[in-house]
Amino acid sequence: MAPLSTNAVELLSKTKGLTVGEWVIREAHSDVGEGATWKFQVILRNESRGCFENVDCEFRYFDMAGKFVGVDEELSLWADYMKQQEDMAVSIPLTIPPTAARAVFTAKAKRTSFLQKHGDLLFGAIILISALIFTIGQFLKK
Image 1 (cartoon, rainbow, N blue to C red):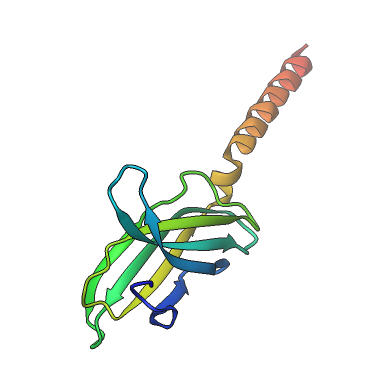
Image 2: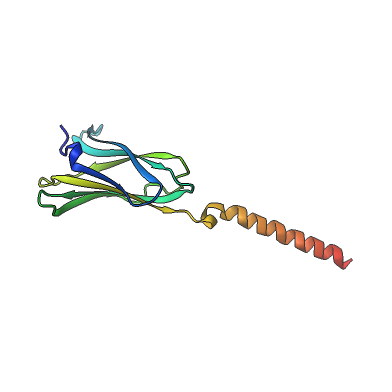
């Protein structure tokens, strides 16, 4: 039986277009003999028109009185971009405090800028245009 009920977990996305989909808290057994651990596993989906990078996730714990009692986090899950309509699975090992009565999972991401996404293409176009201008200039001098 999971240490937190499904009613005790709230899911939040702090980035427009980043949605939190299906999720589960499950017991995972290690092949190394370290015993079983609990993991929070969730599907995140990019439903925006752009790309995301540096997706950060955290799982905060609160006691019955609503007092914060701990956090598990995964920072910058993807060094590369999370493209449009792409989904990613996230797995966070949990260290659930004994006094935890509820939890809040939060996901947020940074949008990629136009230059980050198309910088190489832009640089190539500038080089090509510069070469073209230089060639035309040389031709007109003759």
